Amino acid sequence: MSRILVVEDESAIAELISINLRHAGFEVTIANSADQAQLEVDRVLPELVVLDWMLPGQSGLALARQWRSQPRTKDIPIIMLTARAEEGDKVSGLDAGADDYLTKPFSTNELLARIRAVLRRKAPDALDSVVEVGRLTLDPGTRRVSSDGVEIKLGPTEFRLLHFFMTHPERVHSRSQLLDRVWGDHVFIEERTVDVHVKRLRESLEKVNCQRMIETVRGAGYRLTQQLNALTA
Ligand code: CA
Picture 1 (cartoon, rainbow, N blue to C red):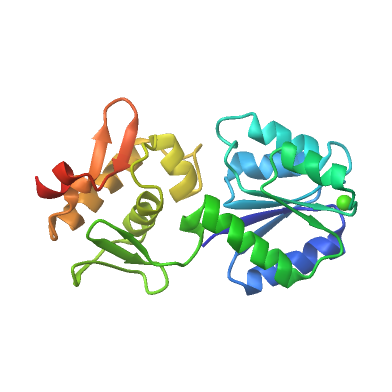
Picture 2: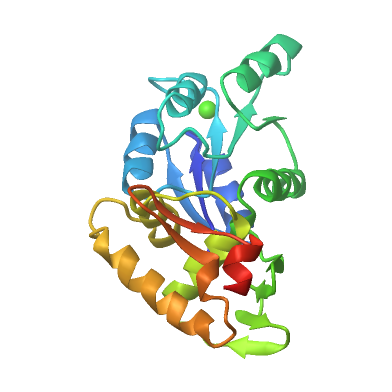
């Protein structure tokens, strides 16, 4: 399930947003300050952050800049909320690294539409759309994976791992990035755990002769590829 972090000090607004996001199938955590938001992000990397500009202490704008400057958090999708509607503010918000910008008051439907649009662009694994790479088809809605009509049975972790690989193909992911994005915990799980599940995933993919799509990149991590040499080998 996709995790959204709502950073908002006005509890009524935070509650309203979170009720609607949960209703739409997202898992929601609320933080009421930049410090608390940072603690939440240190613990679990969310799929997206709804970030209020005006917060007690450090502002949302400064927090967005800080996240963008760090390797682990630089790609977190951020939607910035603000009570201010001046064009200059919008520009500063986007300059600080927000992916989108919404002025209060806004409708929750509009927020949801913006969230889906940003996720489609930056974190498609957070949505339930069917993904196809090479001969593999994965449907998050029905939790089915198949190749040319042959169904592949996967455990829950292997399913999430393959979903992440398929929505980020041809890119190398380190074990620590995979723990962050697939397990939601980069601190308390050993990196070897990733190897165990990649091995299981490959074993399941052998059934349809797609095991070589998951490549080990020495010293770097893993990559899903649909290059021909992997498919025909
Ligand atoms: Ca506020």
